[in-house]
Image 1 (cartoon, helix red, strand yellow):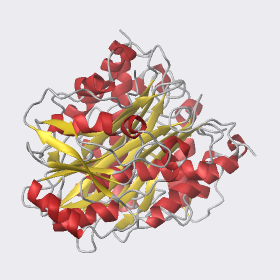
Image 2: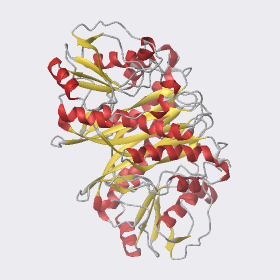
Image 3: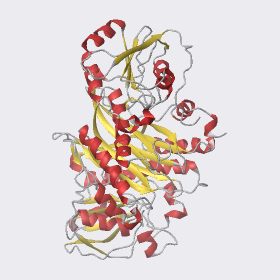
Image 4: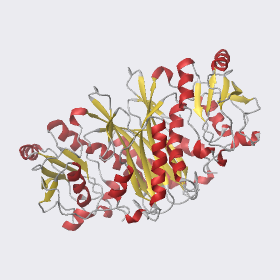
Length: 290
Length: 290
């Protein structure tokens, strides 16, 4: 059988079943980041890796400065989704030897711009040759207070689901220029008891079922979804690469979050609820191997 | 200009000049690992990423279990080179959708085998599509007592240079099956004041000049080198992927290390000295972009 015969989620589940665990691993595979720390530590270290591949996440004629930004910003978004602050990045790149030096330089300029914006070290990495496409893999560490760490798995039936921002249409440019929601996530975890949170990388249609499944819940979408200009509801659900936050809070906290939300330029929208019934409708999102 | 017009070391120097730094970064780009920790921490966290690429580090018909082992073991070797213990790994893989599931499964089996052998978590990662070769990028954390952390940069003129094991001929199989020298490195840093250490990934001919340069020294090789069976001195110098330790100690410590060395099955060999004259002969090692 080929990989394309199974879905991305089934493959990941297959490869992360019963993984080797070190005693200090607090959160393992299946969430936006791993979290590690000793049993008495009040601050945990978050660990994330991510990758962008030429021909999959960007085209060969893309502006490589924006590709560099994207490569790091994707991982920053995952640190934000746990309620954390990013700290140190390591960048592994495979370049074809015939690549123009100016393009490689631009990639690193974009990585630096993102690192400076979020106060992140470019602490190291590896450079190697690629016989094909450009491949950029980022490893990022972060920190989060244990009491504020937001997982995917804490949602409860009746919880209200929110998304930040406007969804869909990312391919028109946002997928290369988005701002990870670190500031908003830090504000949320500092002021509210979030039951669950994740970032939207494959589209609400793929990611909401993941959050619900991790929480042992079903869900009901209650539209309309907040759409990017010119986008349909279908695009908002399925386009992917929004890098907005999806989170679940109790109905009581939900009203407080809405009243206190201080980010005037970033909409906050109720998009549904978690339910006790796990047989939710399947939604359409992005699958890398389909 | 193309990347192939510059050497690997020149490219890395170009891209890591004056990098963004977080306050907790203790050791940045240019060593085997990055090290982070607060100013009063007695234990530092080590961070490493590395990658293997189909067609560069392994052939499409390779045993993917051994490729998985190699992908993680390379990074483990870098943690060892700092004197540390590996802790948590994250694995990012880009697979072509037409890849046989059995091969991908084998890759993860090899990763697990290496993780179990060294007590490492497989804490997470990312799986994505490749339009070409298989890419495997590993991010690994480790820990090292600050006082035992071994850098490349502390070598002094007159220091004795040692290598562990036998060099050369790795392509015959060792490059997929090597054992990272964690045990030996931990013993060394626990009992001796090493001035400098690194692991041999591109061959002594490429790596010794890096250690010498980082230490502001030159070097003299004093052969013969310890050769793998059937290998010439040239191969021992240039084949690469030995994943043995290269370290520098004072002449007084050198004699003590030799007397106390408890690993009867692993040779320990003096291969030269560091010198004050930085105009050393250039040696031949592996360059990814040449």
